[in-house]
Length: 531
View 1 (tube, rainbow, N blue to C red):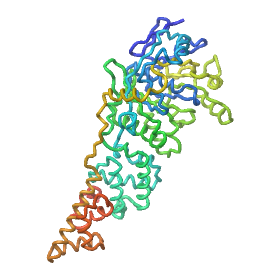
View 2: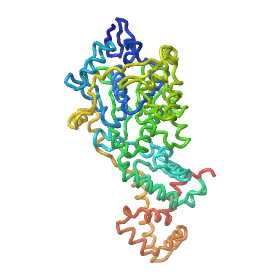
View 3: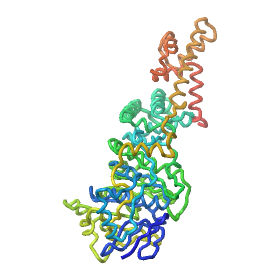
View 4: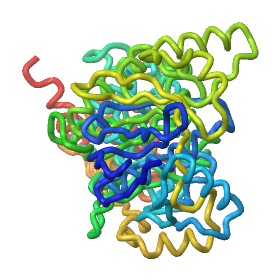
């Protein structure tokens, strides 16, 4: 018999001996009375939570989030089924599983087991179940956007050109309107751009525009814009020392799995690029749980998988631990799987020859325990039980152990909508992200330039009617642009108020006349300077 006593820093005490800086996972050994804990100083070495549906992965994720929060480590996780919202609410003796939880706690010696809520922030890309989450098109970047839109290599090349031209021309790409306007400009000026970057096919531009339209119709437009997510709001520590748990509502997001995977990968990339090097900290600065991890790698191009591998390898030096949650370890590429030192493996079923091979491969990745066969244990563990292995001294893998996972202290299952609204209203982020900001960016700047160019052309036409130098200027402008549009058309379209609704025509007129030539030089001069 031993007694476990929790402290705020995440210590627990079996048989009167303090095991410091560990997150209590549950009881192991022959009688489940040997406490199993995840060392905080190795928690940034990443991890894996795997197992078939219904074997207890969600509860394991929940108790790990609780443990990290108690240890003062902020957590960010995605809530695919809505069950993890219960972290914001205390468990209760009236809960139907209270007796089962109490029995399990007694079985593993967790005698100080009790109920409590945790500090939670709800986030939602669609802004219905949490604070809005936004980023700008520029922050997402052409590689991840191309992945999100499932573009071909040629279309990805055009996307890179659009980003490069926007950057050189001082045209901020904040939302989808900006990117769409920029692509129109690139398509209309494809001949000039091709001299510098290679072929810019109008067909590729059209394909990207169609993909953006589909994304917009799926609600993806809400994700791009300002105010963009401040990473500091994901890494808050409460005055009582507990880390705040950020929960992304992902039930609706799962209808767009590519958007889900791209968003989480973008978030990892932003953390990697923004955080300073910390080496091996005493505890992580943030722990990130990536549920349904297979969505990140399904049909992913090699370049993207290499990026994930690179981020996973290097981000631990920034103090960020990444934990992949999936049904089968085979869902994670081998190069990434090899970096996941802390593992909680729930049951894997072996109904087919392929399942049996996957089971054997999973077993081979563990340091064996002489008391049992690892493959048999992975197949036979019950619901709420798992095969665990954590890093020990000097980062060496620990011996695999059968572990009965401890019960959660927070509410098991989703909270009701009214309780969620109350948590959102009381959040420190309340009111910060709810109102979108639409400042002048590429869409507005290109429209303004197009309007000014069109008006300049009309002024030149008015002067040309009286002859003289103005007429020569206007005629030269027409020759430069190659326009066959009658003079009266330029006037009526300019002053007819149709610039905003007919972006393509307005952008064509942008390069007409001497004013248009100055605009083109101002936009592309930086690209061609020095040639």
